[in-house]
Image (cartoon, rainbow, N blue to C red; front, side):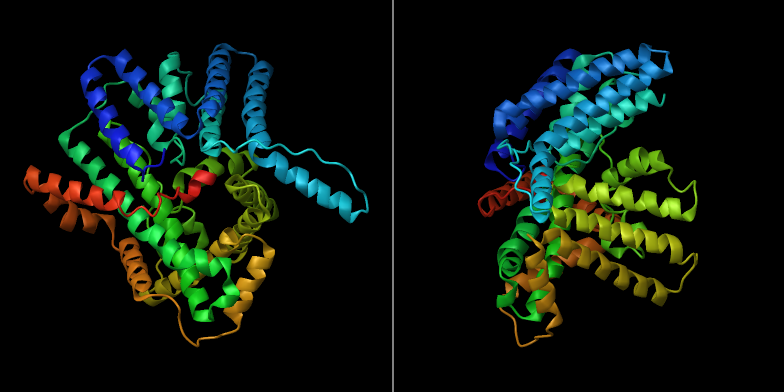
Length: 468
């Protein structure tokens, strides 16, 4: 079920109504959230709900056993079982065919024709997100940072909470389970904040991201040789803001819906394209994933505690695996390796100046932004030939004209402005005054916007990160 679908427009008010009815009963409240989460997921492909249920049961049992176990070797064995089970499922559904195909190509290069087995299983939506979520739970218990959750319903709700189930943000048990174990605080201000975030997220997705794709990105990337260098550059800028508006739009909706139920989800984006370095970019982009990779992979590898060479190795491995997390394709590995290389270079040669001038800050922002943009080219292309064609077209310096419409440039400008304007300014000058308007006026604005979105969804394309 997509957030940008008519089904969700009916699903959310119904669940909110039932939630209000059962709110004062903790058991009914938890049960409703769990049921709603599974209904939400099963609307996509009901058979795969069993995978989430299986992962939930495994990690619930392991969490209980690990919390009660004092023997270090047995605790480590339990952790290994959790890692093997969860990563094994992820490997089978997401990476098996990719590595099978890669192995086949290696054998062919050696002159050997070895039959390779492939499967035709669908990739479960959101498997990368909820796998990392359950892994953080068992790893934190192993490290002694949290205790196990004795209530199975609450734990299952943590794993499958529908606002962020499919595409994050990745929520940690230490942050979310305590919220489940107390009565949610659903104030009018929080509900209004959540509702506004939902509509901001829908605007980012439907009006900006989908239109940028429809007006330029899809056509240009499909046939780069048919467009001028200018159009190729504009389409690349457009994809840079498409993926930001698409993914941050989903996050806004997820955080907003959770707030309407009285829960707080972590911030996932903080104007990433104003970063002055690639290191800063990864503290502003997909924050829940980058912090997960830092805490559970990079630090586990040794972090920056060893030599500079060892630190560089840890950075590269972390980013390569971070790229592979996004998808079973070589372009994602190249993208992860590219960011790993940038971080390694920053580690060896990065500036340590604490108070640069305004012009130096601006210069760094421009350079960093274009480094990020080139990375998105690696992320978006379908194969290496597509990459060669696109870069070749960019290098040709053909500025003969544009095939892109004035509407495209208008939408791109709106996307840039939305990204640059600080959220505090938007809150103080737009959102807060809007919330002070009469309820009937706000209801009319929301209703009109909802009708516009539902009629403007361009067949309701899925969010980009649904494939990960």
